[in-house]
Image 1 (tube, helix red, strand yellow):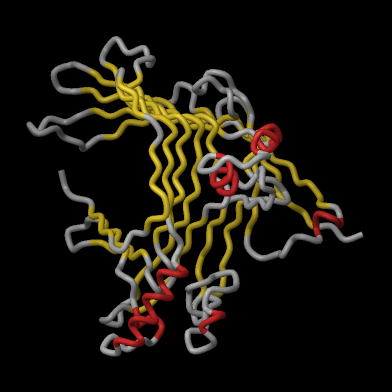
Image 2: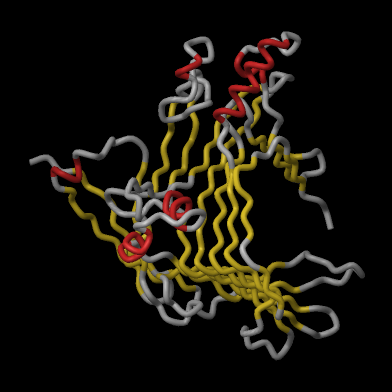
Length: 345
């Protein structure tokens, strides 16, 4: 009987670290492609405990240095009570791992337009390969977070109670930052997510030549993040971490930034060392379209609006201080252009 060896990792920083090789049986092996690197973390707990990371070089408006300490970071299972109870969690599984792999583009722009957006790397030309980072993927209507949100948060499918009863637990993720100012005061920021799911998310990177013949790094982000609760606490010297500045119940971010060669994310840097992220405008030349031909341009944009993925945002309830706002839905939008640049403070 042939077997494929997979990597099993369990980790709890500060208490124990261990690794064990586990064999896959024939049924598990039959669904493995052997392409790329897949990994799953079982009974995973990450907690920095009392460790602290200091950040220097940040100044306030008066030129005084602000001390920043990263006091806490944890990833645990749902129900950890903001990281105080070390509950383990499974991140991916042998059959649904996180994957890092190289994928050949699957779009033949000179072929049949009906086949443009098929294959493993739709909207990326078949002359290049892309690096893909992919979180766990589920086909079950209960375990696929995007489908669950669309059916049971945006809508009210009849079987939602049954799906909720069998859903796997989400993750609790949190961090704590302390800011020390020159006048001796300190401010603390606690950021916590409870019941968080990231399955079905992906990030792509590939390279092409720009108009000057230089290599240009391109990308695409498809984010599917759902959290039962997202909370930011802030306080001063007598911080207890209990006064909520911002709390969101049921937050979903279904963001699609970039659409292959048609509308890629571009990563670059300015001459003074600042980072630039740009979501370019839809590019007709990626498909050989003549921008002076109105019929070709109309066909290109009809194709773009029919196939480029849309984004969705859902907030069940948001509370700021003692004020509460109800449900907020932003459904079916696209970003036509976006540019973000870091600056020197």
